[in-house]
Image 1 (cartoon, helix red, strand yellow):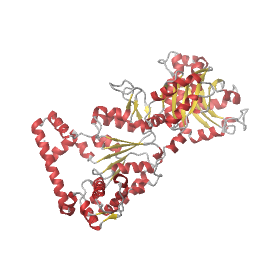
Image 2: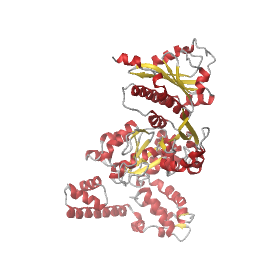
Image 3: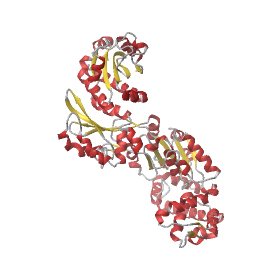
Image 4: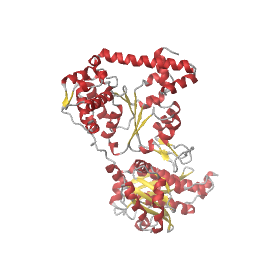
Length: 583
C-alpha cells in the first residue's frame, strides 16, 4: 500500500508550491536553484539555471545523489560522476550542492543550489556546511509539500517555514516583508541588530510601508529610509512568483556586521588590560588567553567586587566573538515572574502588558556573541531546567511562542556563592552546575594579591579623572602604606571607590592620608580593624534577621516575608540562618 502511494507521487503535480520555495531561496541566498526528478528532468529552476544547463540533467549524477543523500560538486565537469555528461570538462557551474528529496524513505528527486559565478563559488565553498544545512531544510520542505498535497500531512505553509527555518541559519541580517509592507520575519542576526538599535520589526514596518507605492520589480527604494535609522547599508530584493510581487527581503551583510560592531579594544589586547603583576593574576590571564576562542561555557567564581564581570568582558573582547554583542544579565536583580521573558523574549500578547510586536530576549540579542549570566546562583530554580535545555540544544522558544529559534551564543556565568553548597541545599541543579562548570576560573580576593594594590590604585587614579574632573601627580608613600595594610572586604570595587572618594576630597595634587575615608584611617587600616568592621556588620545582620523572624515566624511563609523585608533572596536567607545555627 505504501509503495503504491509513493509510486503515485509526482514532483510535477506539486510544481507551483515547489516553485515558490525555489524562487524564495534563490532570491534570499543569491544563488541559483533547481529541482530535478529521478529521471533527470528539470521540474522547476531559476532562469539562469535553465539557460546554462538545460532541461535535461546528466542522469548518472542524479542517480549518484539519489543513492547517497547529499553531495558537493566542487569540480564540476571533472569528477567521476560527470563521466558521459555533455558538459564534461566544460561545465558552466562553478560549484553545486545537491540533496535528495525523500518521501516515505524513497528518493524521488534532487534539489540543487548552484553558482555560475566565481563570487558564488567562493561563498558556497567557504560556508559549505551552512549552505548544506539550508539545503537539507529546503529538501524537507519540499517533502512536506508533497505529503500535504497527497493528503498524507497536515496543511503546510512553505513560505513561512522557509523564512523561519532557513533565514535563522545564515549570518547575514535578514528582514522579510509581505506585499503589504509588514515585516513577517527577522532572523537571529537581524533581531540582534535591531535590539542594539532599540528597534522592533514593527518599527521597521511603519517606516517603509508608505513607500511601497513606488515599488518596481527591479529595485526597492523602501530600503533608503532605513539606512539612517539602522546606520547600515541595506540591500533590498523583491520576491516575485509568476511575475507577481509577493514580498521582499532587506539584508545587511555579515561582513558589515563584523566590521561595524567591532569593539573599541583591539582583539587580544583586552586581557592585557587586566591590571596586576601577582602570580595569581598572571595565572588567571594565561588561562583566559588559552580559552578565549573556545565555545565552552566558563564559570567565574570569586568574592563580591573582585572584577568577575570585567574578566568576562575581557574574555569576550579577546575572542573571535568580539565583533558581536556582549550581553550581561544580573540573575539576582530580575523578579522571578519576568525572568523567563528577559532571557528568552516574548511574542505579542504573551501576557498582559507584553510589548506590541513581541520582544527578543537576551539570548537572541547575544546571537553570535557572549551572554554573561552574573550572580547565576540566584537564578530561580524553575528557570534552571529551561536554561539547561537551551545550553544542551542551543535552541530557544519565546514566551507565548511556538517556533524554535536556533542561537549561537557562548555562555559565561559568574557567582560569589558556593554552588556545590547550594546543590546540597536543593537550591541549584547539579546537572546545570556541571554544564556551566566546563572551564572554571577563580578570581582571587584583593587581600590575596596585595602586590597589585599599588598598580590598581594608580590605574584608578587615571580612570577616575573624567568623573572627578581632576588630575593628580600621584599617591603619597604614606597613603600607599595605608592602602596596602587594609584588608579590602569589598575587593577591587572598594579600592576604586576609595580612590574616587580621595580624588574628590584631596585639596592638593597628591593623594594624602587625610583624603582617605575614615574607615581606612582607623587603626591605619590594620588587619584587626578590618576584622572588627566585618564582625560588627555580621552582628548587625544577625540581629536584624532574629528580629524579623520574631515578627514573621519561622515557618516557610514567615521566612519568605523575612527575606522580602531584608531585601535578600530566600536562598541567601537560608545560608545566613545556617551560619547562625537557626533552623
